[in-house]
Image (cartoon, rainbow, N blue to C red; front, side, top):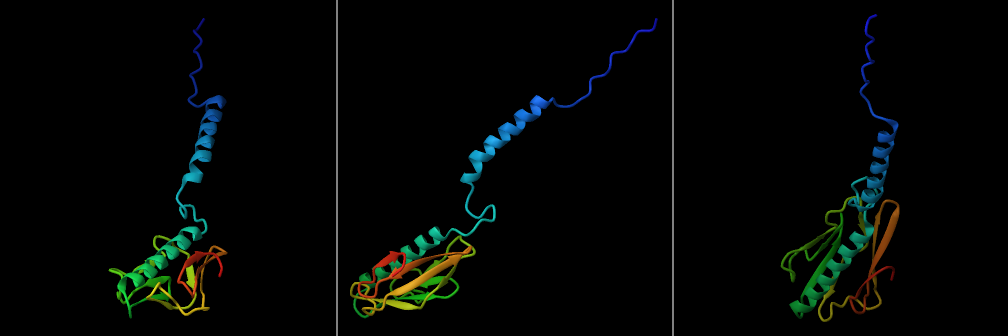
Length: 153
């Protein structure tokens, strides 16, 4: 009687191994996706970061106007983003934004910070609006003091 050959094993994975790998990948995705940088997955622009950049640049421009002394101004231009002291009257380098963010637009009027105290014209608050991804945020510059605030005027 001829010897019977044993069937050759078929290469592959068991159902248990496949489920285990999918479970591990799911756990990694749940942990990793919230930690991805903004914009990597094509999400809306980070308006909070743009608002922080604008407010910081405006505060630095206001401080520059105070440090420069009498008859000096720091100009703030709003076009394709913002430029603070592009003419370099007081700041060592102009501040431009938004930096490292795409899809953010800024609207508002150009204005000057003047010494003393970075005053603008009293009662003429300046409202700058940041927009992107269907959302908007505002930064307000108070006309009386030059104070920079996040949010509306």
